[in-house]
Length: 618
Image 1: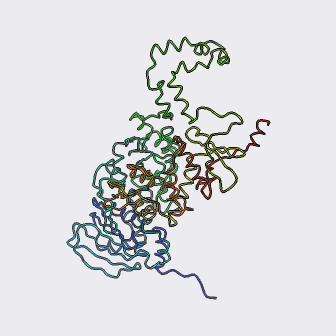
Image 2: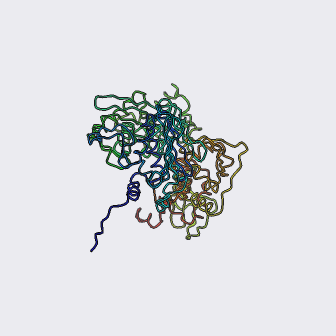
């Protein structure tokens, strides 16, 4: 029987190896940008077409390569950074595997131009299927330009698994941001299909952060700076008010290499304990410098997951450094009391407590009852609470009736409310009548055999979700044209995401048009969106959308529908008028699925009269 094991041809072996390093266009972008930085470049330009599928080109002004080095760079396991096994544990440069260019050459058509400062002419190589098909001298500036065209042209199955252009572009932007943030002393630019997305001038780390994440962070960054013999940490964290519902603006770097670490993220979250809401995430860009021998960066092919020799020390150091920075800038937790707007206007709150008021209060029987020992349980019988209005003043007493929307609760046997039934439910024979709003968050409505307790925000989310679903399916929401179109400036990463969502947003009433340089013009907005809130609404839509982005079971469109429903629903704590409550209830029970939100939260709880009778023994 013939032998069946054989060596793979080099080009096939390279294509298989390329799968580890180059999973998508963004993978190649990362490797090429890191190589440019390692070459000492101070100016790095990234040019892409068709989200990197047609072209990825990086042009740098680094030290360039000799003719021999240019040929060797595309051989597997060829590197200038490792000469023995010990070097593997002292790596301080970025790309070092010795496989990146070989992998790129295995799955794309590559054109390399490079020149050293001491050479009169440069060298140009054209490579396809890992083989050099042309080599010739060329006139070019000092540095390197490497262009890879038609990614996965010879591996069509891999190309078919790539996502849409906007999705792949977002991955590219992520990698670009991670490298450019680590090197603020280097100029970086990103051009996509001839349009400039980023132009990052050289500057300080703070300037680079605001260039990338947006100028709104300029006055809201707190510097972190701690040094010890074991390790140093520096960078910035956002003030508590910049915390978002998504963890997108969070960056950790170890020896200038971007990493992902749930462990270190937990340390930072602990430092923000009680300063931000439990479901919010602070912004941070933190850099840890320590001896390379104390960290293993080879635990993952992309080198984004690393292992520390003593991670508990790192954890404690990161947390204490952030806490110290926050304390230094006098940022401490504050108590946040949510008071009803009606209460805020009462005389007892808005007017000073005069000596006359004080003497009147002290002389009252109510005051005396509470200040005498063991008398609290006699309050009602001894102090005559029917005269409590005298302490408050008639105006204040009258205002308290508005806190629940009704002057009194009905007695047993009364008809609850005198208005006509709000709706006749098509799902059953319940015919509720509106009773009241509780805590500006719940609606209480009776039915023929009990009552419903409805959470107003969840109810509105369900209504909006079904309305938006219908709009996407072919019944576009009416948009009102703006008399004075609003221009909104987005962070570059958000601009890319917004561009991807434009077609669906248009169906949902948002008339947005790209205006170049990460700017969009709002020509119209949904008719029920308050004028002047367009920019805020768009920003919040993107933030909430990114919150859903890690959930793979949702399509892009489904994420957007749920995002808009959550963002535009009336929030708990909002006072509603009688007509608004009636409309909300009617719209809710016109829904196909009124009982739950799209995310599965209950909208209402039904209490039946017989169950209540049992509770009270009747």
